[in-house]
Length: 207
Image 1 (spheres, rainbow, N blue to C red):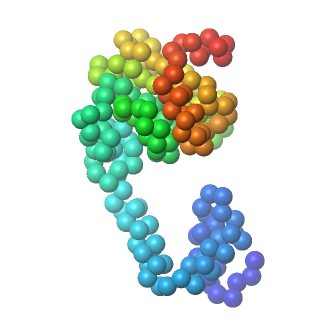
Image 2: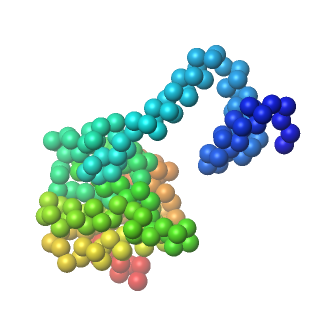
Image 3: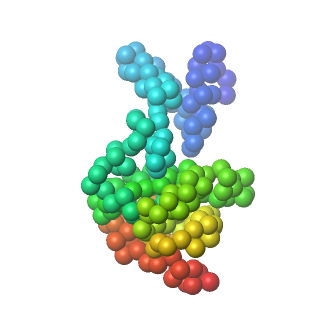
């Protein structure tokens, strides 16, 4: 792709680094921004800069937040003894949209995937194990995507905490195998949370 401007080329290159954005799409987006009022483009640039500089991760659940303790963890009306284990913030948003869950979350920041070089040490698993061992957690809900990587992550965490006195459950398989939580409709996801099953039962079913 030939460019008449180095500035344009650089902008297209940076835009094309985003997931799912090829160079042609990047070019279309950059040209669109050039047609907009300068103030709009500047606000976009400023918001992205602020995001990188000021964003925080909740000290309790590792969710993305504006403050040290996210609004969910800081809410006294939430059940502090109920913890839902998810991959990232998109899953938190999806579950919150169902209005069927009133506990806390623990965001792992990914899932175990040897093919991608992601091991347990790359995720916030140890802090979850320590949270469980502290005795404040009554039930742990595994809400990872129903993929091989998701199941592997669930099982790894289960093995780390199986000697602790707590209930472990997993969302009901209203979510099709291979599906990501963020793409599930709210009714299906809500029912999957409410109708969760003991994790040991899911192990027997998969075995």
